[in-house]
Image 1 (cartoon, rainbow over the protein chains, first blue to last red):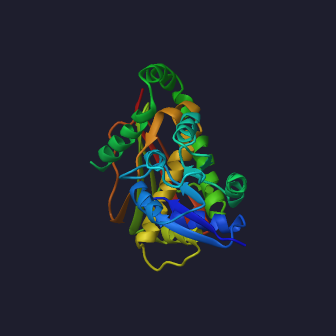
Image 2: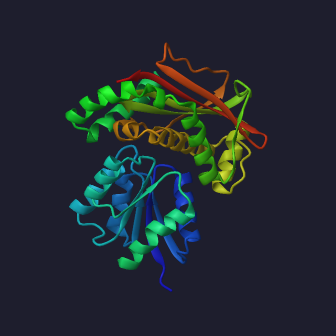
Length: 127
Length: 186
């Protein structure tokens, strides 16, 4: 079975670990995880690594998740790779902004592994 | 000073997406819905939701008025936009380490960077869950990134808040308190 190469972008190392654990619980195994603490770091990872899935927080210092998304598209990094936003912001306006910026999925914190599975697996199957 | 900083950051975030027309309409409705915004049940359900989903533990509200431990850990997340203020999580070192252990599956002997990170995220999720209970607030109030303060013998003072909610909770033998301070409501 081919490994799923994933980029997790969150300024909290604890949240990155929780997201990784949720992905494994969702059945994504083998899983290769690249981590980034900001959108800027995330872009640097994408310039060097190919990934199958990107999960990103929105509310981050230096470069937030929405700008990170716009930069991915503007620089044509990771074309066709699904991006899922994981964030505490949950209003329709925030979801709309994320989708307009290029996200395919949206998970609100706090979340369960089951919710991660429901949002992420269909995107990977489609990609 | 700290609160001013986090509020400024939260306000900047809230202003990125909103139009003047929307903000004008919200000016009326938020003031009118102060009873809904300050409903203490919203805070209780937010705490229950965050701790149940992220830590797998059930919290209960406790009658004590404040958490009393020498060393404490505080996370402050500012609100900006139609509501300005902050969500403040505070616990003793013991509870902070218990929470971080529950989140990460690791054991902690001191309040290290991972514990502070975990508590900051708890503050962030509590603030997001709380404002998410009121749709107009969810859409028109931004959150700052969390600021975490550790140490002994300090207090947080806010002058003449619009309203304030302050609840103490426990899970097992660990206590923590969550305060919502609103010092401006448009």
